Length: 207
Image 1: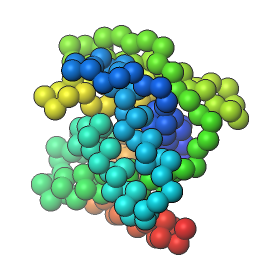
Image 2 (image 1 turned 135 degrees about the vertical axis):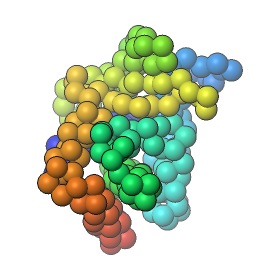
Image 3 (image 1 turned 90 degrees about the horizontal axis):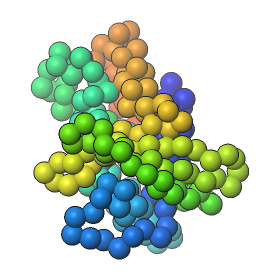
């Protein structure tokens, strides 16, 4: 169920995490610099051959939490069902949603070679958001257009969506989640995420 919308998103996120040649940090970086510098924060994780998988996952979780507005994305993709969910369901869902993202992404660490991302421009999108336009150059295929929607928050810039070839990953995931909720309710989605996270964790342990 998740493969369709995760594959391009994973390609885009890992590409931005391995971008090289980011500009030096400034007191007030632009959204474009934020995207570039994100690569410098994560490149050590991606190139590291030391430490356990659990340690790398924890490092990746920190990068994810620092640079993505995971609670906002999680609420958005659940849609109207977020308001109908109980506080316990909301808490369980957000915890599993973050685990699902971390485990999915961490499995791909070290699985990419040759991808490079270039920032080619940015544009304002509302009062708080900036869309950073990038081009991902791949050794095994044509370049990919990826636009990163970055929001200015009190805690600094946060990524809230990625569009790959014009397709919003948050909207795609929202549609997938809505299908599950329609069939099985919020608890059904929670169990799907729990099972998926458990499967990914077990697979990683055997690797």
